Amino acid sequence: MIPGLSASRISALSSIMKNISIAAGISNLANPDFREMKFYLASGRKLGEDYCVGISLDVLNSKARGYAGLKNYRALASVARNVNALQTAISVFFESDETKSSNFYPGVIAGIGKEWAPSFYTDLALIISERTPVVNTSLQYMAMSKLLLAIRVISSPMRLDFESGWIYQKLRLSVLGAWHPQLGWSPGFALQYSPAIKELR
Image (cartoon, rainbow, N blue to C red):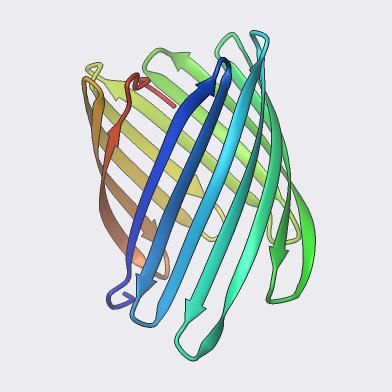
């Protein structure tokens, strides 16, 4: 319902040392009147058999025709535990909001995920900050060992995400879709390459 609005994203993840990984990415949402570009850098380290810790930094640039651009930041640190296919995580973050002031506001993310079977996974996360609390939940199912079906629901702003992906050796081709009450339906495609693609993540 917004003429010419398009989105794209590219990201990469790599192990740089034993038990240490680093990730980086950029995403772009734009049309001739509006642009929102996000950069992120993240790193994680495994501690023993059950725990891992991670940090990340996001930078969001927003511009609109006739208005000065805004730049917001988010710094996050998290601890996660994985025991018997049950994953729990707690994250603390600080984010800026230039529409109010240059101060940083705190927030917390609590999440839990469960791998019920090698082909079936669900998770649930609660995000609490100075904005409206957000509930984020997803379900992933691997059919025929190659076909991934997934759905995600976000409470605020309300959004539904869908994915159907086909895995072939080190490649995953996905057909994506998102539905938003105001923006309507947004289709998309994604191509992922990984030396060791996992069935569920």
